[in-house]
Image (cartoon, rainbow, N blue to C red; front, side):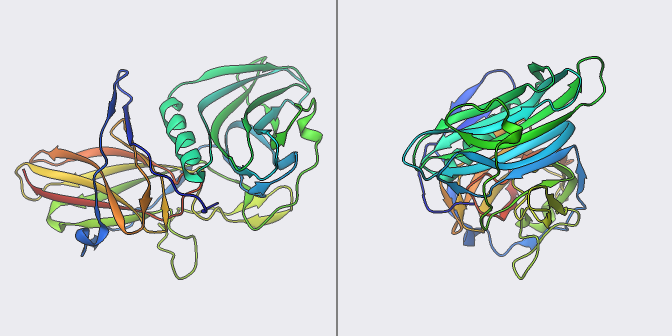
Length: 356
């Protein structure tokens, strides 16, 4: 992912229950103040959901063309992240083409698209919008054979376009899944046949198709541990890897016919149940932090149905996502997160507690 621009913005916190909207000043602490900390037991993760189509190569482009193309069926998710290096505006996004012989219905189950001069802000906008809409199913197109549905946005020079959209393709004659051709692309004039335009040469980044777009697992934390942490989106391999079991899956680049790894799991949503045991048996004040130990970025975390967005963060600091009261019996909570386009992993989540 691109890492050459930084930004500072006001944190926006949005609750999904109702239409509440609130603003708050972000609280950060030096990550050293949370250490030493215990490494939590790594949960076993399971890949669930349909295919993930990842388009991050060529990450920087200067002409029209396709970035990635593959076929998909039923439920699938598309993630893309591309920066316009041309001195003109192009539309950047995804086209879904009905290449079958029957009419189909195309739905979205979450949609986010961000454009910004700051690469990580574009990624944060896309992910936050996706999280806010992923609980809704919308019919976006009835496609006859040969027709295409487009989701794209104008992208000026030096602007990054980052998107994450989940689709469902179903036969119009029933509830069976339908096969479609998916093309992530840039264009000045909308192509009639996006499935036929030439694919641009790859660069050093990754494009490919992966078996599942979600990971599920259970984190366990006991208040007796004190400060504790777990790494999400750690490197898939190498000396910096602290990957969780089942976190990564092998993918296939349908354009260049080779195996690939989505290092950082961009576009993958982590749905993590969090079981907190209160060994003190009296109320505690819990705090949740995130440290971008891989570098920097703008981040998004959903905790118990509330979406939190960070300001610009570096590896030296930790973002105090939220604080909450833990009752004497502990509790079970829900966390959801993903690595935003333009940001570098891993995301290190810290749990702390103190007397209430």
